[in-house]
Image 1 (cartoon, rainbow, N blue to C red):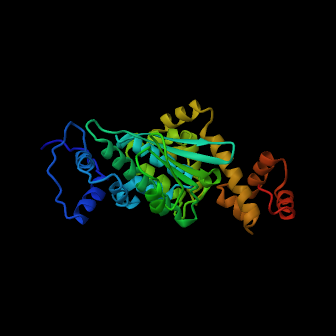
Image 2 (tube, rainbow, N blue to C red):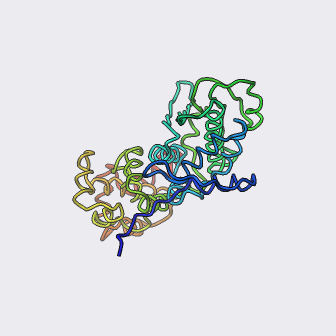
Image 3 (cartoon, rainbow, N blue to C red):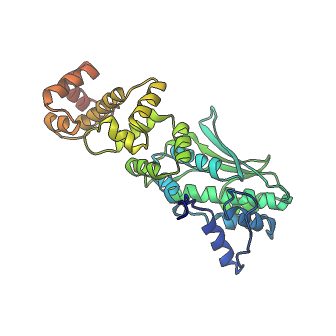
Length: 336
């Protein structure tokens, strides 16, 4: 019996096939050019090389849907904020899409942020083909933002790579001020938009998606999002039950307990410290945002009795639980 092979999912194939089908174009037979190349790559190269005009790339970009991307799409949909969603996109693109060179986020002193996408032209592409490709990327990125955040996501303007002709066509398409300059695609946003919550944000689903994702993708995204510590914190925050032991957390993260302890130590913390800090934040939230009794909060945090919880809370804050609650009631709008 031959050995089992690892399945590789080609997320890009479906939108390309739909694009051709809607135009009445048969999918050409294109053998892969080198080992490890997905079928979508030569197909995309063929589409771009045979483009009728650069603006047609805007239409192709509309065929890319978040739902086509499996667990990566699930992670994108469930990411907490626009900043986190962007990290998911960057990680996926830099790992699996050779046509994207880099994605950068740059904040200015004016309270604005520029999200820059550098594209990679392939050898042999004409000038029109390169512009077609940049239009695909710009259109699909714009659609992604609208899918995640709807019409309430403010985009101040867009920069597209320099090209002949006026920007009016692109301003009409995107409904934004457009500048034709340089070689990158740049979305200009108010900085506050980076913390905008997704309508489908769900930390439990996000962690489940990472547990199911490609290991290389998960490790790179973990680094992009601040390391293993932040991922453990996110996991604990997503759980409705009392905090699990480190063995259970390591199993969920597809790590051995020893590896998890080592990696946390490399970041200067331990699992017990993370649990303690997470308990503290959850306790403060429950005590100020709910009417639960101290005994009920104690049970939700995994304490054997309320006295242990009272002792821990005084250690965390320097106050008794009753004093903390009274002060919070007097200043309900002050963050706790």
